[in-house]
Image 1 (tube, rainbow, N blue to C red):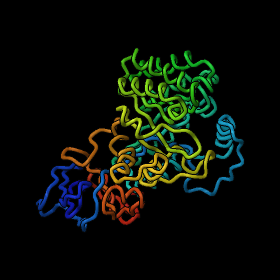
Image 2: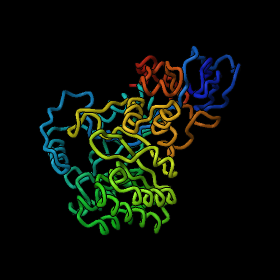
Image 3: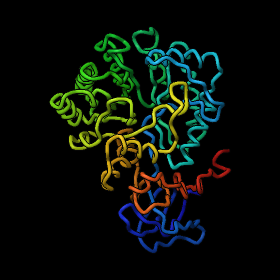
Image 4: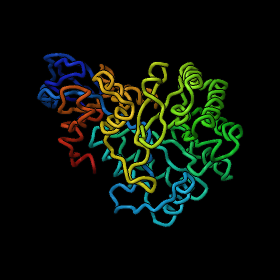
Length: 399
């Protein structure tokens, strides 16, 4: 059933209200709403109503979620982690379909109803991992909306044949084209980006590029990305993930980059890691650049850390950016809600008539408390259907 009357909730502005859902969408929000007798009722008991949370950058295909602990003995370099993961996945029998499904359901339990997942495409595995995540996407349709990014984790030019696989991945339904460190990994940023943007242009797909390159090197690559974004008319369809360079250049260079990004509506994804320079939420917002949040890997061969709880990730964004005032903490929440939906292109999002009825009830006085205390989820609704109560998925959701 995708009709619902949710009584006695508090909106983020503190207003008491009811929410009427019809055919999986919000029909009305206001006091003392009425519905047909057969429409299911739920009492919010005065709890805080939030829109469904958004995971803007994770790797569902890589996770070891719901598996025995992975003992990490990997070297410190980026290439160490790439090579180790590729070898481990080839020999372990890791099942991207089963593990991505387990992690996606764990996200849903905590109120995340939309996920952008980067999925490895390389000349060893071909499209096997993408096929697995697409199985999960189909199995959970109507409960979790999953975007897939065809991601050349092992590099593009340095592994001949990868471009053809990315081409095939986009033809077979990947939603977004991914990229990785054109200077540091491919060592030929102009050619690497020409190939990448050529594929995006051919298929009419948006682009989301992992840019770990630091300081001036990363700023140089970022300028090349912006050049191609402008030339191909891809404004509003490009994301720079991580963008560590924005945390490691001087103020004048940063100002110039942010102005170009704002003009081209190029968004920034941050995981707010404590170990690297990061783009600042405040600086991006002041410049008019959309900045949003994600976990990156969760419990995989790269890292033992991470949690499918986007309020926890918002808290980390707040901590990393020294956001203390309640209105500032709400910026961190925006990174895992409206800004993430906008940057990823998830449609019909929010708490307004016409939006998809993805709703989360939490026990908190307001948004800032929900983030800082990672408030327990009392109720999760996806497309008008109750899918979780008090942190537990309902039985028919996992079937």
